[in-house]
Length: 262
Image (tube, rainbow, N blue to C red; front, side):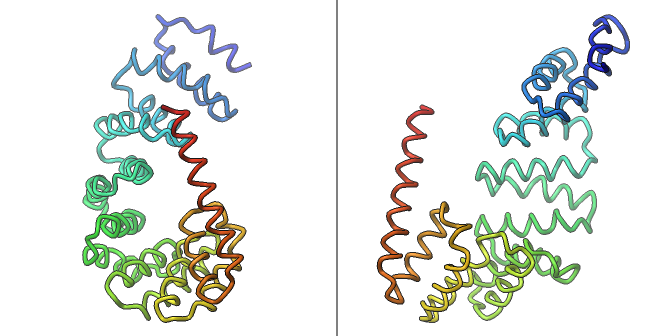
C-alpha cells in the first residue's frame, strides 16, 4: 500500500525525492534488489549530490558483493559526509574484498584520525598492514587492540599471523588457539596452528587439528593444501591424494568459470 501511495507522487513535487528513497528502502527490506537498484540509479543521475542515495547504492552493491560497482558510490558518500566513520570502514571492506590491501590503509587511517579510539578501525588497519607486509606497523595496531579488548577472534587471528611473521612461534600458536575458541567457524587460525605444528615436525597433531575442521574447509584450496601436507606427513596418503584431487577440481572449475565470464 505504501508503494502504491508513493508512486502517485509526481516528479515535480517537493516530496518526490524523499518518497523515491522510501520506495527504494522498502524494496531493499523486501529483498527486491533489482527494483531498489533501478530507483537508486535514476536518483543518482537526477540528484548526484544526495548522500542517502549514494550510501544506499554503496551498501546495496556491497551486500550483493559487487564491490567494484560499490566503490564510486562509497567514495562519493565520503565526499558528501566526510565525518561518517562507517563509510570509511565500508570503503576498507570493499578494497579488502578486491584484494587492494595497500589502499585499505588510507580510509582506515582517516577513520582513526576522526576517532582515535575506534577499535574496529585499528583491528582492520593491523590486518591491512599485515597483508601489505608491514609487520611492525601491523604489530602496533594489533597490540593496541589486544590491550583494549583481547576477546576478539579476528584480532587474535591477526595477532597469530603477525607473531608468526615476526618469528615468535610460541606466541603465534597461543593467539591461534585463542582465535579458534573465539571464532571456531574461521579457517585461518587452525591453518596457522597447523603450519606451526608442521614446522615443529608434528604432522600427526596438525592432521588431527585440520581433520576436525575438514567439512568446513573442504572447498577451500588453502585448507585442502595444508590438510594434504599434514596427512601425507603422517602416512595418510589416500586422504592426501583425495585432497589434492579436490584442489585440482576446484582449480579447473574456477578456470572454467573465468572463461565463461570473458
